[in-house]
Image (tube, rainbow, N blue to C red):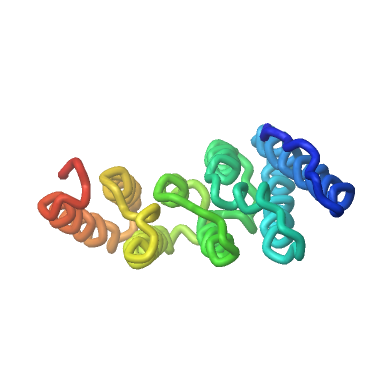
Amino acid sequence: MIEKVGKRNNKSNLYNESIDLALYEKVDKIYARSNEFSHDGIACAFRNLDLLVQELETEPIDLPEGAELLKNPKLLNHVINSWSQSDDAPSHLHAERLFLKLQEYRSHGMRIGTWVFNIVMHSVTEKINDKSQVPRLVNRIFNYMEVESEKDTNLRPDDITFTTAITVLSKCSLPEAPDYAEAFLKNMTLYYKSKKIEKGP
């Protein structure tokens, strides 16, 4: 899944190599279990991703491969994609809780881009514990991206963010959904006119 590095020429070689091996095994397990698209597979993938993030933050030795894992979006993107395609995602990993988990990952140094939050937003209708919260969750995700993008341009809402939000809201039967959709449409127009996104409504 990821390229294994060679031996280091320092006194900590054996210790570092054992850390490396455990790291690679955990990464391989995350890929393998998320590829199952099952309830248990998705749960296991995120459980190991949680452990990986925690270990890489607290590991006292210099582990550049670990830092690169947090900066490289490939691993998380793979797990999120599998989650979105799963028909049986665990309830503790439904959209509203996953949204909070992603914020926690970022606080631990993981680089997360717009694509991930777009996918979560797209999946809100099918993967939410309380259907009455669909418009509010869509709005919360967008507001988070908008605020955080001032410090991290990787989170800047794009045209797909807006079209995803409008599509999800247009399928929502709640009475407040049309008002939320109209607000997104107006905001998308403003973004387009200010050249923050490439495509307008």
